[in-house]
Length: 428
Image (cartoon, rainbow, N blue to C red; front, side, top):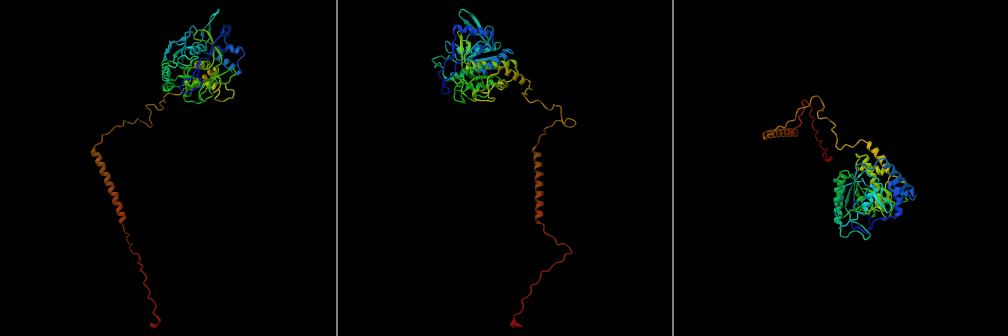
């Protein structure tokens, strides 16, 4: 894929395709190995013994998943710099929709990514045309061009950030409205304007799973697709299974990791290329998501994410910002999806718990009728209320005015008289 280098948000920094053409001898050897198919894209590296144990396990999981489904009937949209006409014969591909409309597009990044998922024709000198097998060759691709070509000289300066935001937004809406069940966005940045973020919410409202790369940016930056709730954020690992720091920032947006180091693929020119960075990892994770949606179409997008993240293999046994929930386990995701499919579905609307004819007691009560109220009725009610208030007031007044009444036959006690003082001595 074409990744972004370090830079300020919304200022599309310099980038280049992370791929190189294969020499003739290498291309022949890779094509021959791929026809045997260990796990289509990873077979040559795995056979060469250059992969670490965690990545080798990932190839086995992909192989086992491929024995169950190749994405039969599921639709996946690829929002990229475009897809050239090099995919394998029989691939189900809709007509490309171009929202960026720059002149003379090469469609390099999107073509290499699509080749990994759907297979492609590879022209090899003196060997003729060979086919690279794909992981989801029976799915249907909706190619949507929303990015200009990015080459050694950087992005097309004539394409403004606002135009990029509009193209991404229109591409998301188009993909949803044309039946995509999974949308792969090769861009990691959200641009000024906010339209693309709004269309992500629209996709989620239609139960569409959006998959995007974590990319290189400030940790937990809000200006990326993967920091949007519900987006499945993908990180890259190298041959040893370590986070590929050139392409993936350690971030809480990272949910699952996949191999992204030098996979053989087919470029826009129909020749063999080695592809590394966000693109290969996106192709593997998106393929697993399509497999789950194809095998268990009734699962919701959050359940597909749950199947992928809960089945991922993590050497530490818990989430980390380096690997997310762990290494992609495509076969395990299908097993987890099967268990999720057995759960009783959540009702979209609460069911009726009491039947219309049910009631407490014997017979059904009659209808309640509204009776018109006149001013005369209100006046009579007011008069009665006033009379009651007057009666209560009178009773209170009488109680307050009451005096105690002497009881008949009761003795009267006279007050004692004062005793005169004794006479003085000279009066005696």
